[in-house]
Image 1 (cartoon, rainbow, N blue to C red):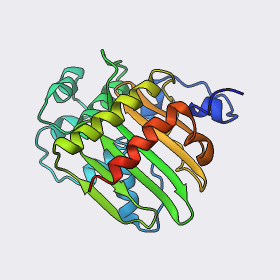
Image 2: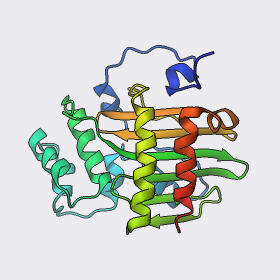
Image 3: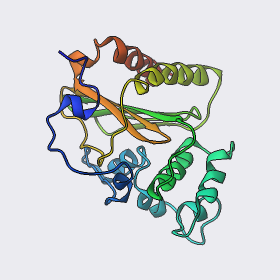
Image 4: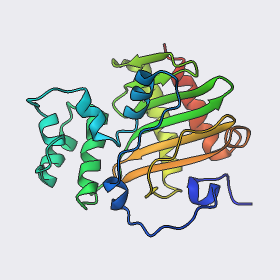
Length: 230
């Protein structure tokens, strides 16, 4: 039996569709609704940074840097690279910039892991932790209640670094997902999504299997510690 169910091509029997890597970003943006409250669903979908229109809804023109670049149809590869290289900007904006480059057919020079999103389908709904490379994080409880960490400290930076080190080992062993983001995990299913400069990676499977997998369990345990960071 193959190891876990890494990435949907192993986990699922999927009808093959001829689709290149970059066509994923040209499709209609994905909007998924795992929660009863629309505002919670809005925050949930923002986590994946794959729908630029959602970010536009949170901004009003005239757009200032870096949104003027991100929202413009005439922005160039160099314009997006400016955002990627800007050390003062948050990770989510860099993910958006990488995705805009990919949509224009430009493959990034480096493979950079920028976010780890852990989802677990529980009895009362979906538990989600999104940890970003810059140390910020968002947690959505199965009830829809949220915790948002925008500031960092020595402890949070250490926890983030640990999670990303363990997640990087997983990314090395799986491939990029070139299709639209899948619906949220159902009850009893766990998923780890990795937002990388060259696209979205993920692994998922039954909760009791994925939490006991040698490769996945390390990252999941690290993620559980991050939720308790307070």
